[in-house]
Image 1 (tube, rainbow, N blue to C red):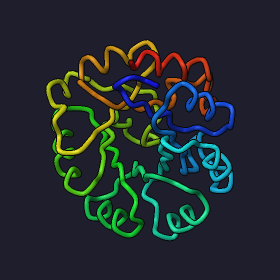
Image 2: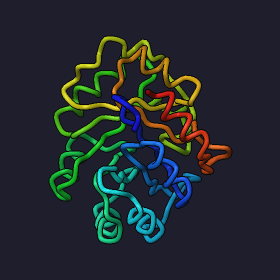
Image 3: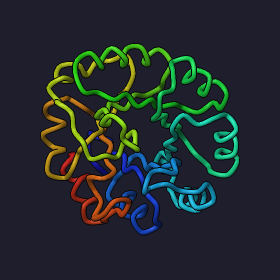
Image 4: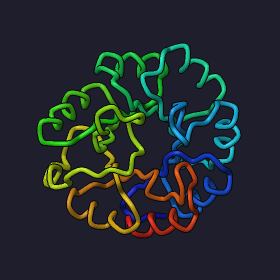
Length: 214
């Protein structure tokens, strides 16, 4: 396993790379349900992957401003442990989803400067976990998975938020050790940083990332 740092490998699409993530010690595996993403899965394909995940590894669904109808269908088909909300969901919407489905909810919060940190306290009241990610460029097609980092110094000394949180955004096997050192993160998330091409996970990079995370 990955020691004291919990790792989430997001955007998995193939049985081979799912197995690589699990074997390397990932504590979370993420499936993306967002058609604009090169990592997008249809629910039936995600169900096939989810049934291969062993007990003790959390299966996370990344959705973006999904309607109740879309979430209903997703959860009817795919056995999931957590919903990751990566859009513009308001605190009220986060609370509504958490209540409706009875699953833990992780809310992604984009950070570019210190002013963005206020949202962390706001969403701490309604989410079970927080994903602190780099804010996407203006007019970007994807809300995450862009391979961008933010200034990790913004998080230095702030590891005692009211909810567990996960660091994301531009992490790679080469920089995750330093990112953990600078931010005090106990959980990290990676997608594009362990890919050989957009949407194509690399088992060797997955293993190297989890080892480097510690």
